[in-house]
Length: 173
Image 1: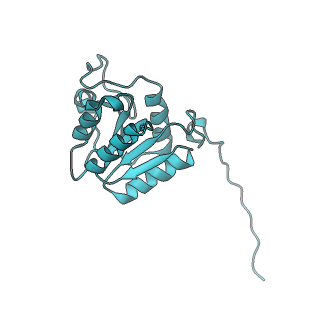
Image 2: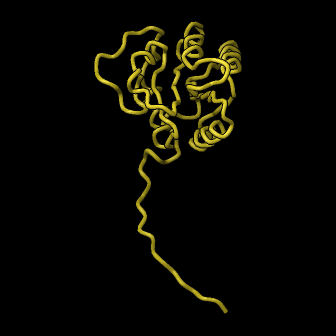
Image 3: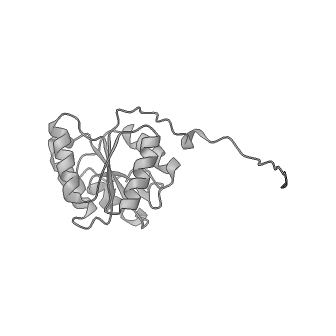
């Protein structure tokens, strides 16, 4: 016949930060540039589940083509999540190339790194990154970062480094 049993799990309500509805709406277009297919898929699913339109690519060169094409069609990306270890170009090179194109002036670049970059915040800022996230990226941190960088003005290339200390993870670079 089998057995019947039950149990009770004391679960808490999810916080607003972990809920999937974006505060910015589906008009925020995000490009994920990572040469690791698994990382791309995970980020894509999290962001799409939150309601954001996402495009992914596996190289810096492909990222530049997508950025330029979207800007030409008046449908520019709002945020580019860039892996710090792209195989074909440095993440800073991609950010600088994007910043050099006036059509991409409002695009925010966020560095994804498996290494804590707090020691090089000034360099990241000078390279045009608005924020960074440490891998593995937690969903709440990802969504909070997207919201934060979209609620701040886009950072021009070579803007002065913030005078305060190193930002928290996901904070402005």
